[in-house]
Amino acid sequence: MPNGDKSYEENTQKQYLEEDLEGESILSIAERWSATNRLRNSMLIVNLLAVAGGCLMGFCKIARSVEMLILGRLVIGLFCGLCTGFVPMYIGEVSPTGLRGAFGTLNQLGIVIGILVAQIFGLKVIMGTEELWPLLLGFTIIPAVLQSAALPFCPESPRFLLINRKEEESARDILQRLWGTQDVTQDIQEMKDESTRMAQEKQATVLELFRSRSYQQPIMISIMLQLSQQLSGINAVFYYSTGIFRDAGIEEPIYATIGTGVVNTIFTVVSLFLVERAGRRTLHMTGLGGMAVCSIFMTISLLLKDEYNWMSFFCIGATLVFVAFFEIGPGPIPWFIVAELFSQGPRPAAMAVAGCSNWTSNFLVGLLFPSAAFYLGAYVFIIFTGFLIVFLVLTFFKVPETRGRTFEEITRAFEGQAREANRAENVPTVEMNRIQPMK
Image (cartoon, rainbow, N blue to C red; front, top):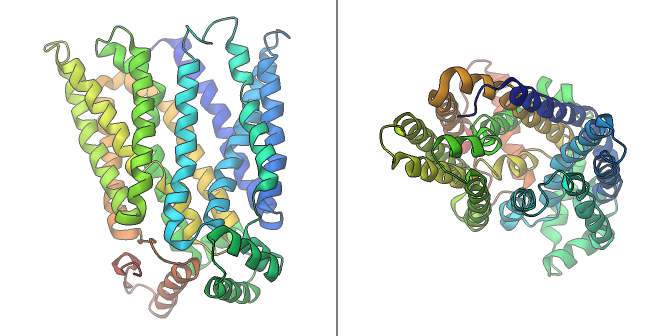
């Protein structure tokens, strides 16, 4: 396990304090911005943050400025936080209902490929040296520039155009081009119905999400799913995998860490093909259950590795399978399912709350894990086992299956439950997860 070295812990805490700041920023910025601006244009503007942050970090060594490095990390953190809200929301709004989950998983695939590339380029034989590390950090500019060049060729969200801007013909043209069919009447009508309903409701703010019965259940589900992702222990494994593999007896642990990145990428692709067949709820529960079992095996192998040499290999295997189960469900699903649970009006605010929940829990794991590992040793993963079991139970009883359902159908199901709750305050209502997806 990672040791209790003071400087190691302080560096870790400082890194994740910066990531917490980015999560907190989502709540106040993403809600107001994306609710009134075109998502595509918003991403173009947000990419300026990546360029600014990359320049600050890339030139910090030349300027001999630690402050530039910290500020650059903060700016990049803000950029990442905004992207985790904008990208899943845009993908969900331009995807056909039957492929919404698969396209949503592409967002996670891009993230894990980025992690793998960073791990490889961070090797000492490539760019992980004292001379080249600032250049490596400055490379964050490249994806932002490439995306900015590609975004003008991407269509605006048809839902945004019709519901927010009342541009029906533009929305129709985009749907026909995206989906390769002239018959989009049903989809246009669904958007019109949602637009009519939005006009009769007051603006959905963050506070309204928690006050309105129609939004309370989906926002709590969204927060729970984000927590299930971060409190599963996945980031503890990734952040400290090199230390874990070293303690397991591996002589070159950095290469084993890259192996986790490879597994991460492969099983995200697997999830891409399964999500529209098995469903979001099933995959998420499968992932949580598998991770819970693997965390127990990781604990056992770390406890017995000094007595049995082969336990080191067992620990590596359990870690890799742990990562694989994460990408089956808890990795990709929480990001895009939030966009599915809300209609156009409250969606930006919901994405802001979900993103803030995700990054805040990310910060807490990074802050507390080193101390917990120091005092508990191998038993630290039992904490994550407990969280995984709790989230598995909550997912079974509370999370609906959204596969094959339109935004309108999902929203109306929650509204129906809210009406029942209003009629009978403490009388249990029929849970949405018992409703089977439309064929």
